[in-house]
Image (cartoon, rainbow, N blue to C red; front, side):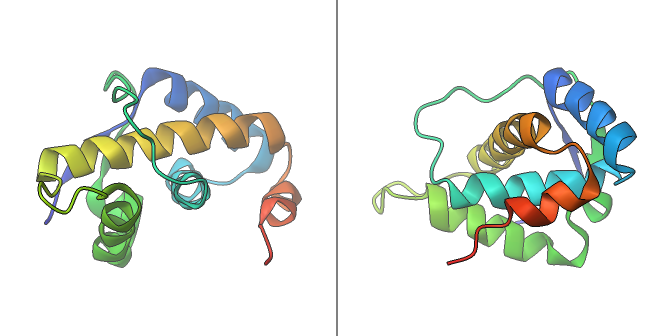
Length: 123
């Protein structure tokens, strides 16, 4: 699967602007971190997808050369029904949902770049 652009929610866009000001880290990198953090927390369940009224990212800017890896991780975490695999649209909605959830979580906890390292969960 491939996508060319992805729009995130207006709420996530606002929180990304705030985190960028506090940390100096670009929104695309914060989104990657938020995505991985949310995926680590598990599936979204039946949560409706967030709106698409916010910032738009090109796929390469958002996920870089790791696009297939990120999409595979979304599939791994979210695709629990073996009889009906997720459609491409559902995968993108879940990707957007994980970014939204992860950004919301990070916005509360991350005040400086060092906080991103403190947030890493070590097994």
